[in-house]
Length: 395
Image 1 (spheres, rainbow, N blue to C red):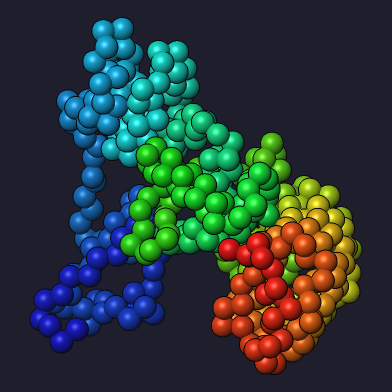
Image 2: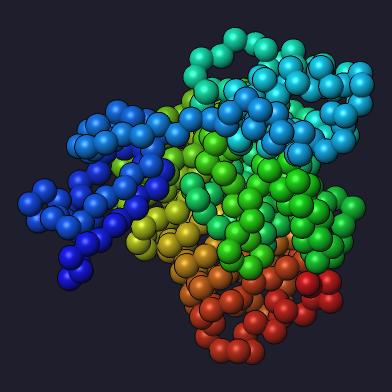
């Protein structure tokens, strides 16, 4: 801020900010400093005291049509398709993101697919933002495989906005969900996930990431996917990004297939809650806490994916006999014998950056184990992990 003239750009702002609390000069202190804000809500700009507001409009009609033809390739040049394609393009309201998602989704599709898409897009909607969401959901509905749909929903659900999503994390969840039933070696599952990522990128439902082996979800796509994932037919996926102060009510547990929670401080769990549909559970804490309720996992017999972070774990894993993926990361465990003796269906086991006081001499009943992650893991001695590592099918 020693410069006499400074431009600061804050992109995609959704709510009011306190400039001084984030270290930005404001008012008399900010002379020589200009702040440029982009937002989808003009009221946010006004609350922040914007002096000039500029509306970024959509493309001109002829530009939108040219762009649509470019993204749809030669499909629109067929005589019996041109008028239909033009009507579909008009329904995109000259919005670049809507044009990209719809045109690439329908590229090479037969005439009846275009007519079906046109009928869906002609349903009444409100704002241009609503139109973008409709176009995104159309692309989702046209995905070829249920695996691709599940992959998109899971990626949007599990990770926060603008996050660089590691392919490896989705692989581990996918194995837990049984996406790769005929695949024995995990590296082959990774290849399948790479194919899914490429398929979704071609539809512009996923984006490239600057980080290796990662991808991103556009925030509009993420909102649409989370909306789809929260519907009853998908079994309700529930996620809280804000730090909770108490556990969700019992009806949330009863009806959900996936729950992701974040706490600042541990609250005593009521225990013994029936979760007949729950397949995935993620519980994370900002700082170390202890999970000691003996009956915490009672009623979670259908759970196949479990991820716990920043916990000292004293609870009993015995009810989780259907578990396929277990990630205990940044945790402390006194003894993992109960895991290797009880969780017979476990295929993925991660102790990333965890502290284990005692390691069993063998991998016990873990005959299906495919991947063991001991990265940055504290063990009493190096030899203590040899029993777990004695698995010829690791990858």
